[in-house]
Image (cartoon, rainbow, N blue to C red; front, side):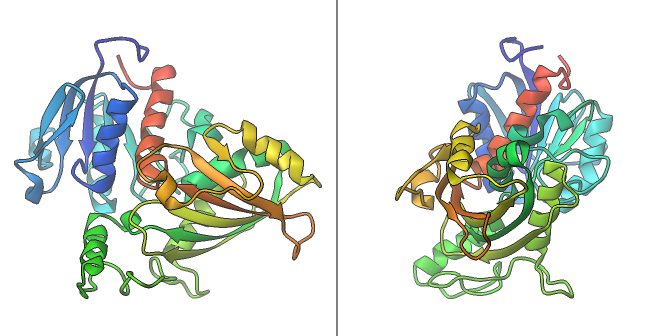
Length: 338
């Protein structure tokens, strides 16, 4: 079945009233994803609300195993956190759905593909459950995949400047309350307004945070480079939407800046800025699904390496749009049943 088939699919959005779930619904409509019917699942506090995709509307339901919630569902998009995915994702697969999971449960599972379509769409294969990467890993993989294909990579080092929305709806509400004079700190490790926080997840014995470990491990899996040295510093910044990253990378083979620039100009979903131009979160939030790359220059501390700056809407391409693109790839390979 192709996207032009007007019958469409039975789609379930799990976590439908969260930041990513709401963006999933919006992106499905924008991309004219063919939907025949819709089910929306959320927490008990969301009951009474509804979710709309185009002309299809669904009331928000609470997941209940006793009622076989995924019976008849063709495509299930999960963005409700680890506990929900651990409990229900495989149940949805057994019910016949093609599942795309945004949680961290399956990302590093050897039997589950971790997919950024611009980098490794062929990894979907015959799998019925596909993991959607971390919202910082997605734009990094979009940018580095063409460089890896053309020149190889010797190592990658980066610092992320991650918006508060990446920590979820409650963290964003906390940020908004602080901007209005509040001082409650509950969902983030410290006050974020007027501040930056170099802490994102639990530390390991070496001093790396959970988010930093995720970025490194996920990038290696997406690029098919388990040997690739990757180090990251993850920082939460007082921005509502839009992740930024300062990236340093060493191609495996000597290459000029101009050739790197040419590769980025050709790369799908990359908008390359040359010279003094660059993008910032206010330029991209809610506007598009590109990874905006600028400030490409030689890394003078590491001859042969390069530095650059990237920005991406973390709710769209960093999460929801990437998931919908995975679904579109599955349509083309008939993984989503007609």
